[in-house]
Each structure stands twice: as structure tokens, then as C-alpha cells.
Image (cartoon, rainbow, N blue to C red; front, side, top):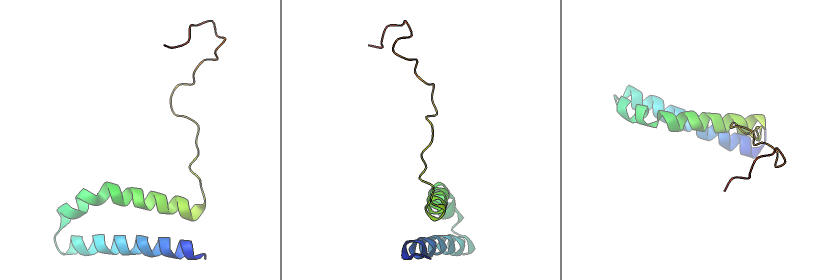
Length: 74
């Protein structure tokens, strides 16, 4: 395992351990506030460990070709 992966896993374990300790100590509001950030952290670490670059096709509508007979947007 590369050193980058070791650091990544260490950070994930530290953050999840901290969240568990805060929950046990009754600081559920702090954990709930940070849940979106924790979810993003897990997602990013998963992508880093699996090697996905995250490149995807655009989610919006695909623009028509310039010669489709319409005026270009202003």
C-alpha cells in the first residue's frame, strides 16, 4: 500500500473515531451537523483508493450543433 493510501485511511479512521466518541459523549448535534462533510470525506477517500478520476459526461442537456438552423444564443 502506498504512503498516500496509508495517510488517507488514517485520516478516515481518525475522523470516524472522533465522530463515534462525540456520539458516545452525547454530542449528537455536533455529529449531525458534520454528517454531510463526513459523507463527502468518505466519498473522496473511496475515489482516491479506487483510482477513479471522477470524469463523467455532463448532466445537463446536450447543446445542439451550431448548424442546426437556429440562431446562436446571445
